[in-house]
Length: 452
Image (cartoon, rainbow, N blue to C red):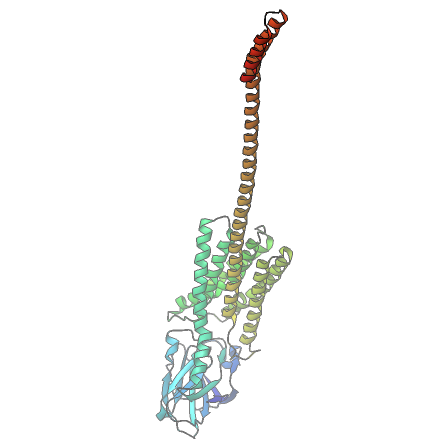
């Protein structure tokens, strides 16, 4: 495998209405030596004024293998990209179905176009109308080798991962909407769903680049770019609703006004084709979201410090990481970092989603724990009430038993009074009057003893 970093560049301005299909002859004018990867900005460095142009890059490779080769370019911020080897045009068909600005390029070079152990000229033609040019390093090697592996790894980071993140975001958004629909008072689930939908919309251009007319294409691109302002805003609103902070704070109103105005401006730029629109687009899509993201991170950290909960800390940490990755991408966009570095903002979407999922999970587990604790407390109270009732029943039975004994004593006393008492009293009167002899007294006493 060879890594090609030295190249020659030439820019050809296209006339209005002229299109390039990669079949234009290679220019013969003076070539400028450049080192790949390249990041040219502003447009005057590439070609004076604004319009469409062809950027030609010429490289030389000396392969040392036989058979078909793979020509891999890490990234190219442009429209259609062609490669010519041995005078034959190669087309990377990947651009027809995916994003061009973030995806890697792979050209298959037939074995008969390359001479082994000899210098071969490789020419790239980049048809672009962008205000800057980003073109990564070039690798060439056997088709079934490390070059193809590097391409597949980069393709996973550039496209597959954002696709997976989008699906997960949509699933979490559906969950949040379903919960909020049944429990309207819990607004943080609504904020969660809207934030996930905005993140899913923002990630669309990472893997989908529709072949549509300018206005529809610009509307699609600007709509997905405007979603970033809503991602920043809704993330903060979710954090506040999560900790039950009062709504309607001044900073909330500022964020909502910013997101609305920024979206309207960004969408309106889809119908404008002027040089100054790029500065306004950069202001509303890149610079203002970066400033608002910093303000949101600061406000969320302050909120997390005030409430001191794990959920708020997780959201604050995720937003801080997202802001850091955004700074990395901004530095890469402005050429401070190598343009070969992958864009990391989709990773932050996954981190935000994990943080949101963690907070929802903690809420769910907390609700289950509270329900279990409530059920346990109810069981304890029920057992205590049961014991009290059993004790009351025991006391009641004891009282009833004592009452029955008292009544039985009273009945016995009445019977003794009415029976033996009367007999003894009558006998005593008869004895006192001398009407009973000793045998009669003995008989009365014997009957009384028998009755007793």
